[in-house]
Length: 324
Image 1 (tube, helix red, strand yellow):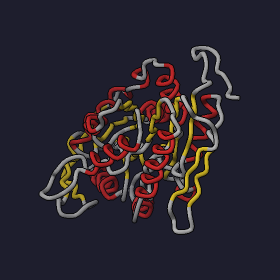
Image 2 (image 1 turned 180 degrees about the vertical axis):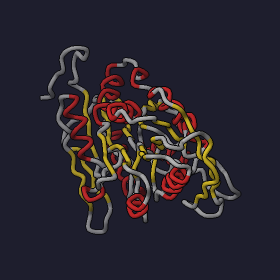
Image 3 (image 1 turned 90 degrees about the horizontal axis):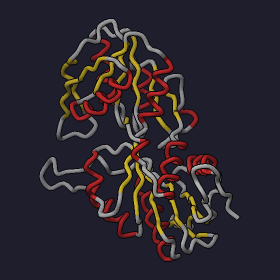
């Protein structure tokens, strides 16, 4: 029998949390914060690689939360999500919320060149068609992706966790740096909460080559100061390390960086290790291999934040209290 919570939550008797293979440790941690056990299901694969899924308990009429970030390998984890959603829909779950701490394919949110797809919209359509009733996600690469869904979307942010960490460090003469014009709003929010100045990296990206960035200039005073680069995700770390190099060239004393989603593909680790960045702080929205957490990379847990959002959605209370 499911455990009941006390206090502001009357009961969680019909609240169920399940997980695929993308980030099971996060799902288990979320359940610990909620005071329930992770739902039982078969998440194996056939010998040819096809995902084999079966729910091993009754979920008829249940409020189901399915934790499955579409992190690398993106296609495999996305397919797992779609199959699991279909299974819960066919098992008569009352409501199915897809919990996507990391939303893959988010970088293709518009037609920025001729004859290209809008992949973020396609993925939204797939998730909705598969059976999701609601989406819970974190730090979307582009906020307008919320509008790609015709179902409710709760978009929360990892900022409270990251801000708490850096506020506790009491870094001297701190300046927050936006790595590009698109990240100014995010960086400004961090600067405001920390009570420090804001700077901007003016960069240009080569349109015909993905992950290739040329930093042109740093707008703002970073000389002799501690700089904190704030971004939503780090993939190959090309952009991040070039911004860090530009800040160092402008005379910054120390350079830190933070992001919500650490994809860290290709040469990312080597670039970060060789960069002037003292520490990159990220979250567990994407599971990090233990070898990746070097002296320069630290992962903070956002599981309690997601658990609080799940509890609010289940109880039909405000999720906006978690916003920054």
